[in-house]
Image (cartoon, rainbow, N blue to C red):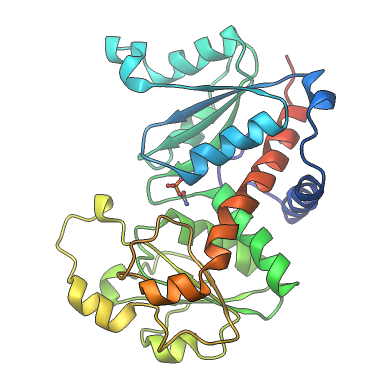
Length: 298
Ligand code: CP
């Protein structure tokens, strides 16, 4: 792998290679000294807020023995007018092999990946606008595999703000490719009919019936111009102890807004996998960083 921009750019066997390597890392951390011999350097450039993704990329880099640097835009020369490509190219020249980028503009990371970097910089999309969050989808796939085995024919219900969610987009694409029956449940103002493989069921009780996994989504306030009718949304679409099937697993990419998309009672009694997801994210991101670093030619 040279870059990781979106799920579309990954073949199924590459996805499975990431998952197998993540399984190895889950049982064999830290690799430490072996990797330190061919030390990589990772730059984290987050232009939108993050807790899980930024920390787990940092943790994954350290566990691999890589050096990791947090880019602080407010203290950088971007404020003196330097563009993103020149910034990345200079970081590459200084010694960064991989740039992990989160940004609000859709298509931006792909645009940056098309440039020629002087020392062969690789880019990883760590969440871009409403369009893609590939490592989140990979860690969700990893988590689903651990709990459900093969996804062939499994019913995965994604509840909430589909149209503004990069997590939903990457997950719908990846999980459908591996045979899952993905059902989206949301009010019409959160539907996105431009997506492939999309199936909606607006009634949450019908949607959640016979689900194997239920994935809640945060309402993406920062990407919504109109007011969301929260009270009505909670009444109709909150995942709670009344509508959550006992046999299904409960997931959420985080951050969870308690008592909005999931009730606090359900979160505190059935939310253990939501806390396992970011942990799995470390192993999956180790696998991605490792496979990309293998391809780094300097
Ligand atoms: N799931 C996720 O991307 O969380 P953060 O925004 O905290 O990184």
